[in-house]
Length: 104
Image (cartoon, rainbow, N blue to C red; front, side, top):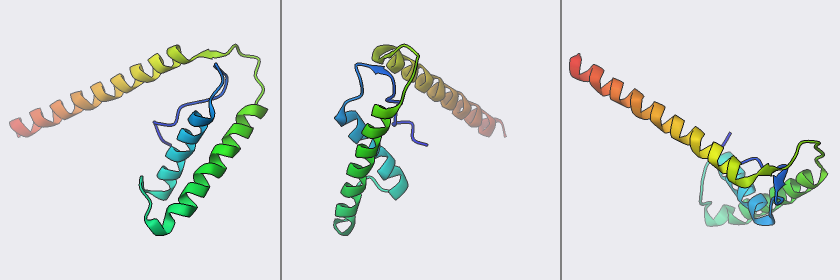
């Protein structure tokens, strides 16, 4: 879906309203296909963000787990490592592509 939306369930401390809003904003941007809606669409865009943020807070409040809470720092480090791997793979691919063009 969207790499910027991070899992918010079972974190210590619990997800904040701001994090729920940020995730909702990213989701609506992805679905709407725009990061900045036109003036004509601003109201419906903002309303969707608020409704989805509200639903997200209710979802997180209702989820039950027996797993211990996840550390925010450890989860952030995992995301950074995955991102670095993705970008390294992309860099290697681009180098191979340039090398193939130079030969051919």
